[in-house]
Length: 463
Image 1: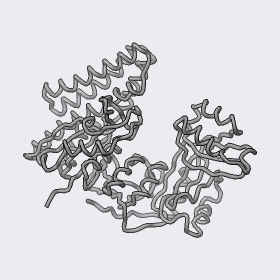
Image 2: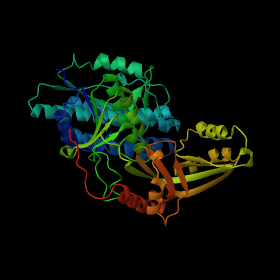
Image 3: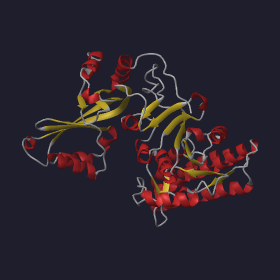
Image 4: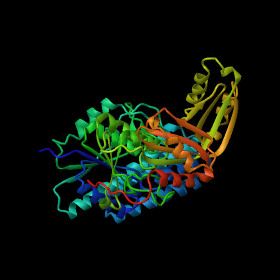
């Protein structure tokens, strides 16, 4: 009987230091992972972005301090992982590349998205070299005949040239995965590669956007026709809500793809919203667990699940704004919504929720949109624009929500003393969302959690 093909992705906290890497290597070995996809070490991507920005706008001395911080951190991990001089030479090659690119940005006083992608790619390239060594140390300790083999994700993950938000080319990726990762020809190999990065057909380095390591893992799992995709992080699965907000949050044993997608889109930090798309296409179940406490089990994300509760979980997305566009010209006319969405499309700004009346449209956005004054000026060309700040979007995620009588009454009875600014219901049977003041967000989540999910713990399903 053929072994299952398992792709395991480890996040930045699981790559945090040498001990974290050794712990994650043990998890990958015990799970019998075929391909391990790693993020940059915790905090490194932010450091690389700061390096690029400082090199562009400040002195080289200031930029070099950030470069040195990244270098010292990774060389310490290399020593802790007993890397050979040859292996440290590979790391130093990446540091030379990083310094050269950063100096170029500084001399030109310009950091294009293309340059930023190349600079950011160094984080995953460093961590994957370090983790390959951690994997080798663990295999040696277990006297395993398997071999840890590093592979450049850019040999597998081909994308378009939309730098910073590149789109993967699925058919090319599948062919390359079959060429390089064929389980029948590589039975004794555990491959280690990078999340987040890819390349164009012309060989230019690209990135998939922040959070794209999960997405990379799902794309490669699809390319390999994997049986399971594992996402290892610092928390044991997906909870009914953010445990930092509500102490009664429980672990969810299993959740459907559609529910998890809604939950991720509306604020849950466990999964990148796009992560699930390749898994859905290929029907690959996703397991989310903690590399720090793998024995706690975690959450299975599947196309079909055993139970479908009315409310499975809830999310709070803070720092939202409500933009209301009003004009009498909207009455009995066509094309107004097209104009609105064209403006947002031109500025590549995503809208979360929307409601309409006879002469007004209200929509919710992240408050960072306020920084884009040009977008607001373009909207003001054809409508009166009103902006309300310091809001939060509450979302209840579940099943058959838009066809359940009495649900809205139960929700609003539990928060009857709190003003609700906007309600969005009907577009999805899996989601009911509304807007409130940011300051009362935690209180609202706690009340709703008590009303719909209650107290106590839900048993976990382990692997």
